[in-house]
Length: 392
Ligand code: LMR
Image 1 (cartoon, rainbow, N blue to C red):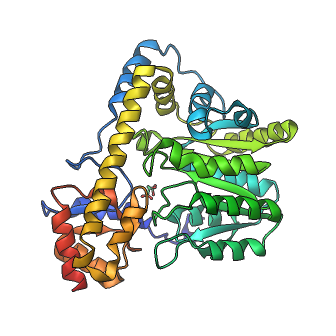
Image 2 (cartoon, helix red, strand yellow; image 1 turned 120 degrees about the vertical axis):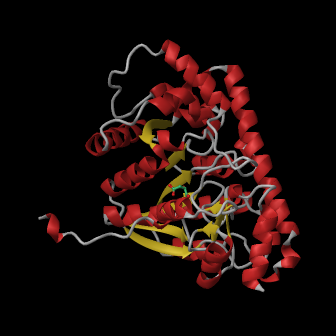
Image 3 (cartoon, rainbow, N blue to C red; image 1 turned 135 degrees about the vertical axis):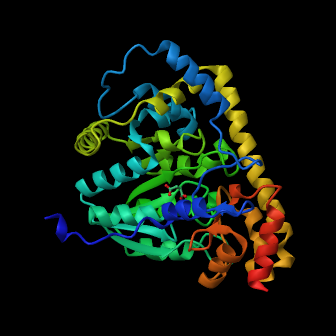
């Protein structure tokens, strides 16, 4: 039977990691997959996580099963950071742990499908795995343009998409630090989206994978909180990969908001049984470490400092790129300063991206996306010179 399978292309982003690894040039630059790097080019385990792991080794007395909902202490401890400290808002939200943000997106879309969603509206470009998950579930993707050529959110395109949408549709949005464009909605735009989404009756799903890496922990959640307040129902997919540096530990959560308690419980029970049939239970270690960080005020403070450090560094890389705007006029680098998070899209064509790789050892996604955190004080000059070469 296995002979019937046709070969699948490897995920382009993950394939880039291998290509980069095989390049022997010492001054190669990795701007591919989205991991944070320090100015020394390292992706260290957070000091706060190390502290939490030490506590965990001492205190954990069992590794027995927890259930499909995972570590509920982790889910509850994270909740105020995402949704704010307003008890009223938190009261109508229930969450469960998932294997990474990807697990949360998968589960959100699966439960939406179980509830009758057949089509998902999504701004494009988006994180490529969003489309892959939709395809795998057999959900139709209705794409609309996410950003204008001027590097702002294309609200007109979203409005048009919502005008033809209704029950049976979901709207998948990025909370902040949009992947891959870095272009986020303003608060006025969030308000408009909330009103339109409410009128249309679509189910809103928000993917929050980079909280704290844009403007700040609170600022990056403001749009999401506005939507939670405005809508009766909403699904939030959360990742701790970047803001706790837990990539391979796969730490995520899905939160369900429903104003009706009975609907909330019923939705939760569906998520629970979908999770059981998919991964049974999420991996424990990373989520338990996050719980320890958030329950210990010293570790919490240390973690917040670490997130601030990351954000400050990325803002400074953005400023350096923006300052080089006049050296590569066609790329509009000045826009990068007004955008957020780990990623930006450069207006480069396939040949230029290939030349960057072959001639300069610069690795970036074929879409023109760069990981801002791959640039350091040591290599940003070389990168700008390489851009000058391929665009000149
Ligand atoms: C990325 O977009 O590079 C990250 O979210 C990592 C991934 O899983 O694709």
